[in-house]
Length: 134
Ligand code: THU
Image (cartoon, rainbow, N blue to C red; front, side, top):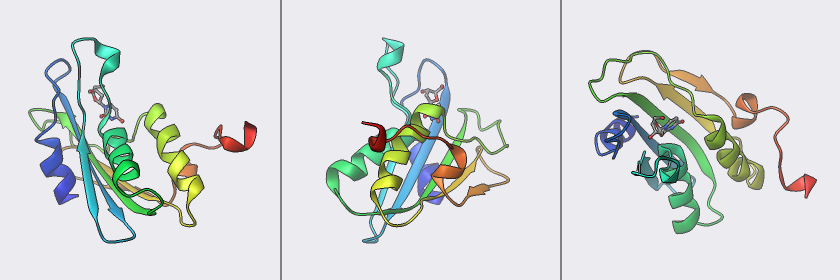
């Protein structure tokens, strides 16, 4: 979570002023971080969780993700309730969880304060659409 906080402070969020940081622990011990990257063409931006998990997938293909820490708040650090990942990020994370043996533990919080833990992405996205339907 400390690394997610550092990543959040590097977020590029000039339009929403809502900054998100994410850190992933991989089974090989590497920690990959990401933050939200916004764009003048708003839908072209990307959430912190997907920036991080796609970076992990591109740099360490096939290496399992063990844990994911997420912190999110307006830039002024005013939000102190746990902020869960959006639906599109859940769908993206599910792809990786489904492809590996272990579940991914998710920890999420606001700028600080209470941390909520989910033992598995599947708890956050039941009835997921996955490769078995293709
Ligand atoms: N955002 C994330 O990075 N992760 C989420 O799960 C929800 C939203 C970003 C996207 C956008 O840059 C800003 O937060 C406001 O929606």
